[in-house]
Image (cartoon, rainbow, N blue to C red; front, side, top):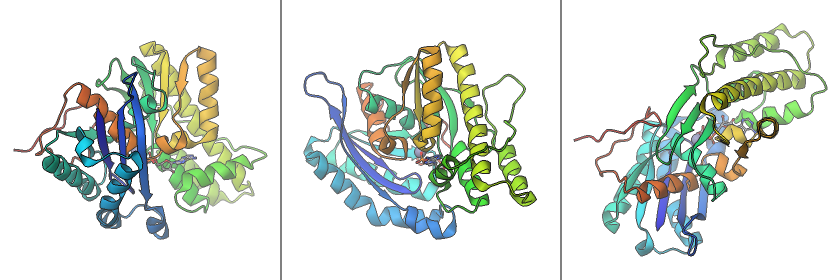
Length: 341
Ligand code: KG4
Ligand code: ZN
């Protein structure tokens, strides 16, 4: 089975091909092409939706062609087309979704509307082909921070999510406050690495015993520290911020592991590209003797390999979508996307 995946929910135009390995039948990534718009948005300090949509329109066709060419797969060999239908920027989503539907229609193949957050979890299955549910996943990106339990393939139970800013968004905002450019996550991480001391910032505690996150208080604490200008070096502020984010992520994940008794943990999303976060989770996994899967960097940040992978599992279940399926900017993982009439 060979699946073409398309992603355009935010600021990356991406296409990828996955297929079943000839002997084992296991999921295999054949190609993954990502065209990043970071440089186009950088002057504005964040993603500009209209620029994102226009850029997707400009590059989508050649990105899809490149993914097929790199996989050495002809259109006739595609068994189904999968595209992100949400969550994301509405205008951006529509470009990849419409391209995917058009291809499915012309090729007379089934179409699969993929949830971007569920796809981030699936990057774990791409990274390690022998990985299977039940498992726990922490998806931390620029738009989302979700703790998800997968009792089995295709079943996503949200245990906790952010109540305000996403972890990556907090990184980007803190980086802006520290005078670093966009995107801030990797820049803040590099600055923190040079620190010789670390500021103390509060870790938000939501006292209801739940598994939700909150990062907006931390952002305010960084803003106040910067305003105080008491001579604290910027690397110390960056390191303190990072320590607080890690404490929040590890704390909630530990609680979720207790609750689900999961023995496997997938760390996914753009924030999982952070080495300090990866290292702390490696320690947690060792302490608890669980299997930790952190996909390689290229599969952690937005890509279409994970969309194709989610499509591959959906195709195995014959969970196809009608071509009337809408783009849903706020599609929650684990819920059904309703088709418009
Ligand atoms: O998953 P992703 O590529 O896109 C979304 O779906 O949001 O995640 C992008 C987010 C950005 O907020 C970026 O600052 C953050 O991931 N990020 C990082 C690092 N690399 C990317 N955050 C912290 N440390 C990093 N090294
Ligand atoms: Zn993402």
